[in-house]
Every structure is written in structure tokens, then in C-alpha cells.
Length: 72
Image (cartoon, rainbow, N blue to C red; front, side):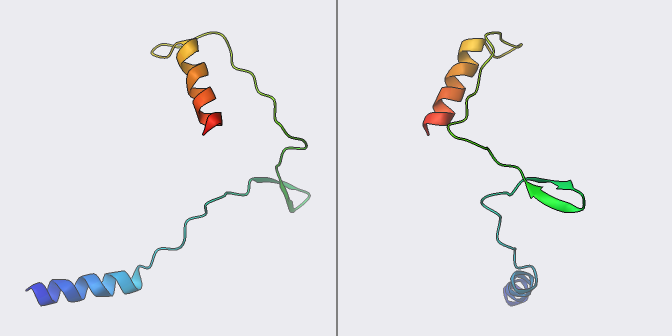
């Protein structure tokens, strides 16, 4: 029984090899039939965070989370 299960698992691994995940997605939009990449024209990119919260998340909590994300 274990030999049969091992064979099935081995065949499944050979057949169902996962394709590599794309670490960086390339975003674009179609323009006149051609894919044009969306990218920032200049850096650093300026961003603004609203000073109002939503149910369950205060404005300060959100601002702290954004700051931690950009710091990482």
C-alpha cells in the first residue's frame, strides 16, 4: 500500500511540476494593440495618507502601517 502511494505521489510530482512564480509582475495597458508598461516617470514617488479612519482602522493605525511598509 505504501509503495503504491509513493508511486502515485512521484507521478503527481513529475506531471504537476509547478511553474516558477513571477516575483515581479510587469503591469501594463494595451494601447493601439501594443502592451505599454506602467511605470513611475520619476522617483521618489510622493504619496499622501488621508487623516480619517474607517471602521476598525484608525487614521493613526493606517499611517503607522504605511510607514512600516515603506521602511521595510
